[in-house]
Image (cartoon, rainbow, N blue to C red):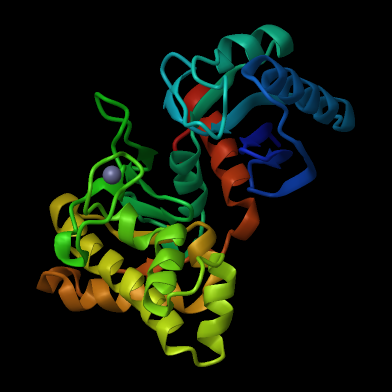
Length: 306
Ligand SMILES: [Zn+2]
């Protein structure tokens, strides 16, 4: 039995657990994310040391899912958004290896989630998968031959900035206009509902709840976002060609109908060979990031490719 420690660093919480080579997750811990890279890496080292004390077998390696643009080869965070002040430049691998004396692998959280998503038994044998995350933003990751693709600028899978001009001049978080993220992310759906109803912007959960009570404007806001995402993904899968698309993130998990709407729109828009492409929400659930971090640890530090 080979055991690795898996860590998922988020903007508000840090989760850690032990994962064995069957994919069983145990000894889950969750703590609040402190401010600043030094404090975060200190907490992560303490969590892994705590896990090491709780298990008789040795921990072989540590896999870390981290927000921001992550240089996996160097083990360093290259840039981060304003939600994680001081996180850019964090020397994750060097710091944790120094503190723990263990091999450490680190990757962007969406790429790590993609590695976890492909553990879904329905994707057995799939080597090429596009993972799409819809939450406060729209992100993605491309798995090629079982491993996440980084690309020369570390941006492979950043699908949120595909041009979708049909909805008009909406501002994207990157500063440009008419991008997918500006029409399909959670805040965009809430804003579309607010525009249609002239009511103050409500959280997405409220829009979803109103949709279930028969609110036409709420249903239209959700359906428009999902359909546009599905249509954009149809073009994307024609460009990159994959075995399957997996969907994750707060919007997908918060609105049951969303994934079906994306799937139907993708199939309707797609080239003929792609009209029955599997589009699914992984059954790995909340453990997906930890399963991905564990797989990252094994593939990167042990050269295991499963
Ligand atoms: Zn953009």
